[in-house]
Length: 311
Image 1 (tube, rainbow, N blue to C red):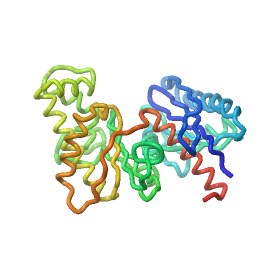
Image 2: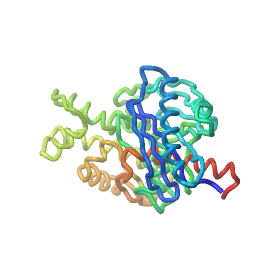
Image 3: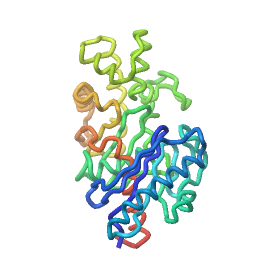
Image 4: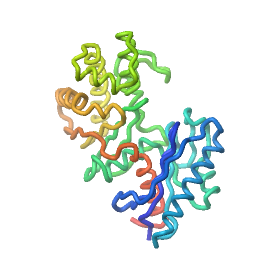
């Protein structure tokens, strides 16, 4: 029998979020947050994550459930099948066997995953996509990735599934650091919205939230930048929906805080371009910045169930 209590840890470039959850209900039983010691190197980050897992394990010991499953997620290229972070630039990880390293440090198996893919699993199970088996989760933050849940299963493809931010939406458009031109990430990420507004007006802004505030105030340049972001996002979403048949599209990340200013035109434009497709519900994420950690815990429980022969 698998343990319904699980630990999920989300390693970000600036912070580490750890949660102890009831994986049957999604309820958060304990949490711990700390800074990510990126400057001190991968060993220091690993040690900090291990300490977080140990701290949450002590909280779990107050239940009668036994040792909890542990899942850890990171950004970048993550090969879940072998527990290796192929590349996580913001963390300084390159071909790092993080699952094995953490397992050795804490004395129990660790399931490794990708932060956005895990967030998609969490939103599909407990958040805005609850009750659906085909969910596309798209957080619009500094970059853009996607968590794709199809027939109830999270797609990984050796760590390469879900790179929606690098779908080309503007042929011969802006140069992207990935080497292509016109990638979605260059137009519709929160970082891109702020950057493109500054480039258009010469007026620096603190971030996408300030651009959205200017949209609401009727600033023509801000409206144009957001419209370009919407058009780019619709192009990418249409491709994803065509391939995956998503029943729900969950928009998260910093730009989703724009609310109706983003979601209303996005829904209108997407609906206008759909023809034979299943028309998905377009909703905002519900789990906030805890989605990745909740998803990490769910991945760990799924692995534990599989290894234990559970259905």
